[in-house]
Amino acid sequence: MIEWRERHISEKHLVLLLSFFVGMFSAAAAAILKSFIHLIQRLVQEQLIADERTWWYLITPVIGITLAALFVRYIVRDDISHGITKILYAISQRKSIIKPHNMWSSIVGSGLTIGFGGSVGAEAPIVLTGAAIGSNLAKAFRLDQKTMMLMIGCGAAGAIGGIFKAPIAGLVFTLEVLMMDLTMTSVAPLLISSVTATAISYILTGVEPMFPLNTVEPFLIQRIPWYAILGVLCGLISLYFTRGMNSLERWMRHHVRSIGVKIIVGGLTLSILIFLFPPLTAKDTTRSTSLSTATV
Image 1 (tube, rainbow, N blue to C red):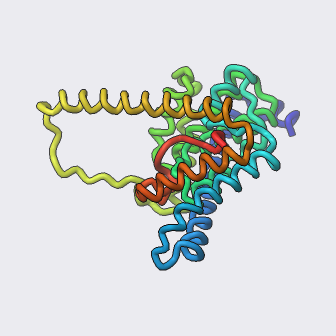
Image 2: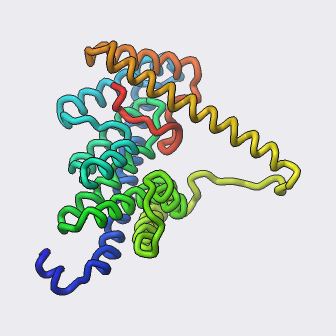
């Protein structure tokens, strides 16, 4: 097949064709992740958290974290890590090669965690899944490292477009976070993947926006200073969140060796927070932070 492709399809046309399939597969992965999370949520809410027995919120996150940790430790047997950092590491250190299990392991691990009430986000796992799809598809066709990096970007853009129904957000995310060069040869495949994934998401889940927004007041120039202050505050909160998360991970890694103790400490802490602050419950599959099951 590769020999036939080299004779009949140029690499430029192959990249455009693969970007379409990467977007399609990324959208399918996003749909599978959403369906998996909703399935577990329905089972938990109908079988366990019935008749307003909210004390189950103390237990279900521990169950989800335990299942995810056992899945990663004994089935995957590899560090899933945070989605974005894994992609950046693959681009910088592994010649844009992402392991094949990342095409499905993040879906299972994050689905278990979120479905049982863990307050984490689905965007980082699906971005890693899409990037892994792009990397392994490019590897199957024996493309060079530069093209493989472009396919990783296509997978990330398709994942964002598929799960949020936002094609431009997928393109901007890839160019900004993955720091890809903005050239005509890279923009077209990224757009194809992102738009394809968004279109398939529309077909599978309807055309309703993920986050509907109703403008109730017009834009006023006098409010620009307040917008700037809001941006500074959000930046400080982001800095606090990132440093706090990294510090907590380092503490868990160096002071808590046993996987059982990690599950108990992390699960009980999350359970108590969810019990005290019910809005932390992951009722929406595409919100919250970009955490994964790496902490446990």
